[in-house]
Amino acid sequence: MGSFKVYSKNSGQWKTMYYEKEDESTSDLPGTLKSNEKNIEIPGHLKIGQKISGWGKVAGPKECARECIAGKKPKICYYHWTVEYYRTLGGACNMCVPKTNSSIATDCQCILADGVDVAGLLSVNRMYPGPSVQVCLGDLVVVDLHNAADGNELTIHWHGIYQMNYQYYDGVPFVTQYQWRAQNIGTHWWHSHSGLQKAKTLEGAVIVRQPKEYDANYRLYDHDDTDNLIFLSDWMHDSPDDHFPGTSGKLKAGQSPDNALINGQGQWLDKTTGTWTNTSLNVVNVTPGKRYRFRMINAGSFSCPFQLTIQNHSLTVIAADGENVKPTIVNSITTLSAERFDFILNANQQLGSYWIQVRLTGSCASRQIIQLGILRYAGSTVLNEFNTVCDGNNPDLICMKNLKAAEPVDKRILAEKIDVQFYLPFEFHRWNETELYTPGTYKPFLAPNGGGSGVIPMINGISNKFPTSPFLTQANDIDKKTTCDGNNKPKSCDNSSICLCTHVLHIRLNSSVEMIMFDPAANGVPHPLHMHGYGFHVMAQGSRKVVNITRENSYEALKLDREIYKLDSHDRPPVKDTLTVGYSHGNGYTVVQINEKIAEIGGLKAAYFAYKKKSRSCGDRKIAKFKFNEF
Image (tube, rainbow, N blue to C red; front, side, top):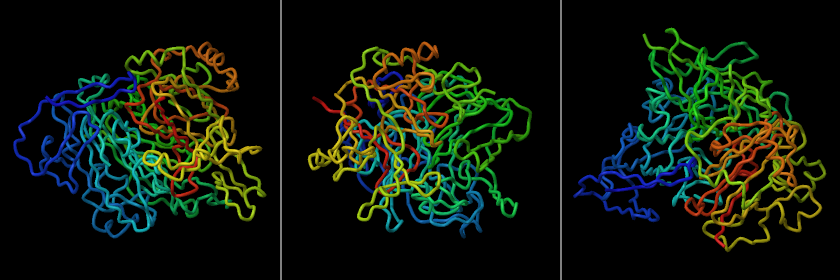
């Protein structure tokens, strides 16, 4: 018998899965997998079909995108990606048109997007979205990445994948740097974590499936097909570099996109001429009477919320950020950058075609960007509605806090005693012109909504500055005087409303951790937060106008939160790895909790804003690193 470990954030437990070993008396190449998985040796330059001792044959992308069977041996899933500069509507489009939803691989190197000619893209295997990674729980994923884009450094983040013993492959600059075990199920995604490359199309889906008998919701759907993806992205007709730090022009102000795409496809209306491009819309095919599991990924790079609706169909949400939730019926789903939701669609309407509609809302509503796809049959409750506040018991509004984990959570999550509590206000500091343009100084800034003045994002008055050396490999080389947290800042930050330093939150090993996050700013820019390689339980959400939570009254305020909202999810708080802090143009709060044997996950994690607010190519400005210490 062989075995591997898998993880559920809902239950907070690692489980051992067993499988029958196959006869592998011969092998082309040696390879070892130690039982504790802390040292995996896989030879370089793999080829699909070659044998690895102890593993069997190396499988390709299509072979790995299979039905997952309990007791079957995991596979080595090998991917070879080539990154290069590319364009839409290139010469390949004279030869072929890509098939709808061919997410794993394509035999056509044409990228259509919305029918506007755009150069300077960074593509993987000349696809957009990039090739999806679709594997079974326990598979070992090996990616060979050939960087053919001259002049670009490159690192890939596996967004949503928990990294037990693989933290070195997580892909965060200056924290971690591709082989990993599929240890947690769900809908995830990959994207570049260097500069603005994600906004230049370096992104794609990651799906980890499990045997259906292990899925609490498998009786609710008939199909979980490899192409049942809804990959949403914002789209610019010029280089994202042209929007940073942000212009003040009327036509191209700030970082607002020109369009949105569904699975890399769409059309565009030229408002000057009143004409539409004639590219094809994305088509999703269904069979009448069948129930389909769809996996929706918000791959937006900027701050616009996306609202998804499917004409004449309700959506049953069953998972958020890869973790199961109690099935909840809605009519539309609103998400921000990096969030993922799985939902079931019942093809029970009359034969015909129905619109799939994506609308950009929030700060982008004035641009009136709508994209369409088609749900094609063969032969009004809202989730996370933007510009509303999760502060009441409105039956027509479902927020993340209203969802309920599908299985019991670790009892430690429900304990009243918390070992460590962090109070983390999220806001922007607005530079005055004297501060920003003093000769000899070069302060980082952004202009997300246009205008002449610049802002810089902060957590607890700190805007992160990357260390001089990577934490995981050269922590001793880092000057401790350059690290900080809300209570300990360098002297250079005295008498200043903003501090530029390396933001590190120290946590004792095995501690229970509560983070109270709120957005006091009323600037219309939402704050989606992502925690790398991990997840958190959503304990509370609301408006500070109703529950005025502060550092001093947090205990009483959270009691008031529960008295007001009376949620039935308090005994099963849902799990997310990406969550928006502060709905309705700010002044909202979100409380999350971590309570794990964190040592099993890794020694250093990063949390950051999930949309692109970059001031340098080395990474996000607004980031906090969580360092788990063993005392």
